[in-house]
Amino acid sequence: MAKAKAKAGAKRTPGRKRAGVQKAKSAVCSAKTVAKSAKAGKPGLRAKPKGGSLTAQAYEQIKEKILTLHFLPGQYLNEGALCALLDAGRTPVHQALQRLELEGLVEIMPRKGVVVQPDNFAEILKILDSRVTVEAELARNAAEHATAEDARELQRLASEGYGNGQPTEVDTFTRADRAFHAKLAEMAENPVLRDFARTLHERSIRYWYLHLWQTMNTKATAGEHKAIADMVAKRDGAGAARAVSRHIESLRERLTRVQSAAQRRPLPSR
Image (tube, rainbow, N blue to C red):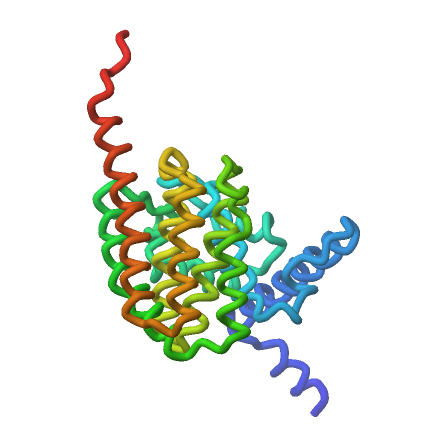
């Protein structure tokens, strides 16, 4: 009887055997990754469950590298290399890339890999036009729902991080800009519009690093943000919406001027 059981157990199907081998390999790889992270003194994604799901962490880290041009437009990304870079498993990284594809930041190409999507001039103009519509409505709602505390916080964010109107680094400027627009969207109490606005704004941020630094006007931006915040504090929804429209239209005009100047610039002689 014992021999029969042993014989039956030995007759596993090739598919089950391969699955068992793959599972064992996966477990070994996971163990090696964790051990490597611990040895290097870096917790990695696997050791940080408190910061959200592993997929969410991978998504945020890859997205930030795309927005700040650590990964350049048109660059091919390898999932295995991303796993090593982020100290993450294949599944979180793959799911993060799928989410980034939905947001228009990467394109997953079967049998070729993942490519960082480029943004051309026509594309960024469409993004800015969309921002006018979405963020004007968010500002209108923010004015309606604003508490005194939120209004003061928005006014504080409107005046910080811009070097008091003096030239400042792109990183410093974009951090302040993101914080202001994120707070405005949060105050609107409309999660659907908030998330849509965040995606559009982040696409704009990447263009800051590519080209818009040439149009960066800290004094103008600080003044425009202050105008928005003041309208929200007064609970003037229509005024807040107009202030947002003026703010984004100002950026659009500066960008158009830079683009026109670049097109008129003569090509270097060979």
